[in-house]
Length: 67
Image (cartoon, rainbow, N blue to C red; front, side, top):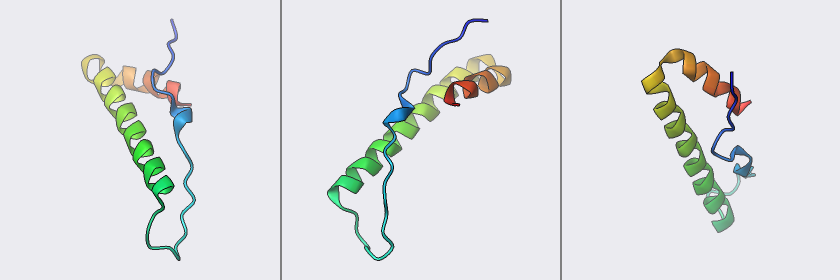
């Protein structure tokens, strides 16, 4: 069995510190949140495209790339 690398850099995910006392996000927090959302969307789309043609067994294999 050959292994492949996950094509999306999940290390690009940025931790965001939220403060419940602040009702608004700073521009940095907003930009980081948008980048995180896009990163998650890209990962979901990739996995869905990979799973649909090959079935459920491939999905389980693809999840190993996320670990």
